[in-house]
Length: 172
Image 1: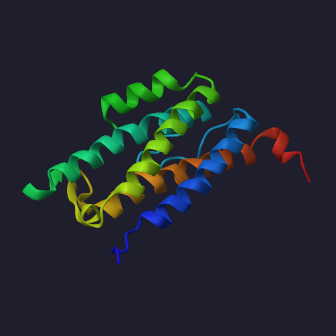
Image 2 (image 1 turned 120 degrees about the vertical axis):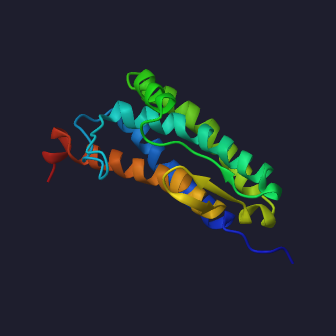
Image 3 (image 1 turned 30 degrees about the vertical axis):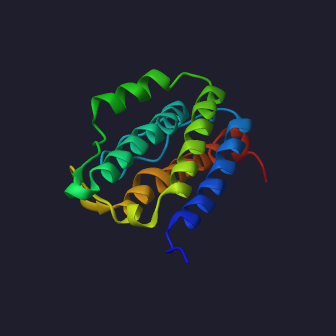
């Protein structure tokens, strides 16, 4: 019998958040700004949220692959911080692109993430890395914080933006 892994639960959540993001794609670009980030106070428009959604999965999948590859030699340093120039530049570059372009990139990345999570052997889930500000994290924590949970957080932001549009406020 194969050892249990967190993959099944992550895959179910990934399916659910994908459905939410597809619905947001159909709804179009909402107006307004997100609630302030709890750490930085930064507020984003929907274009910035979509640009970040489109850029972060490929980055974090690369980091996870690196952590798994060096697992035998000990925990690997990984990750970036919110002020990372590459992250900031990608968000700025993409903020005015159409939602559909972001969703096309995200669909490919989500498919790749699904395959990666489904194919990880049980021993890979024990891999650990050291993030520059969060310290030691195991693979389930990384997938939660930077991938699946992060998609859900930004889908929540889009939910809030959509609810705060003048059209949504006018509905009874």
